[in-house]
Length: 129
Image (cartoon, rainbow, N blue to C red; front, side):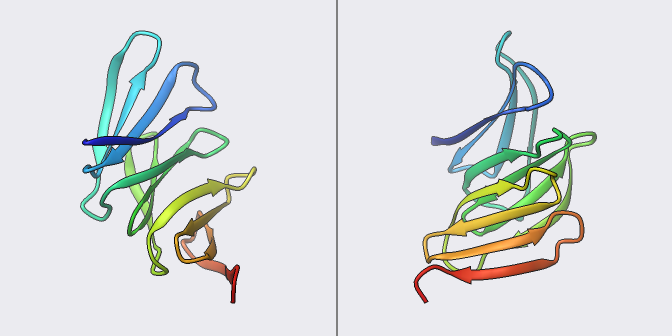
């Protein structure tokens, strides 16, 4: 990893953080209290990691990369869904409070809402169109 772009605390486990960045398709899970690397995982489906968000229940991690987002189940660290962001470069993502939806935004003014369980695109809006 050349540049760290994002870090996120696990909402359900004290001291666990996820880190990702430019030049890597990997996410690193650290115990922030001890400094111990817990797990590294990644995907050929994603490129530079720009954003990471734990689901509010702590059961999934959304990994946002320049070409889209991937959902990873934290029980086995297995990918379950991949979302394509075709409106430029993905720059940020966020979970809904009930962990059922993901919002994606990027550098070309598109906001996408996805069902985080089925992978279905629920809505797409453009801010300047």
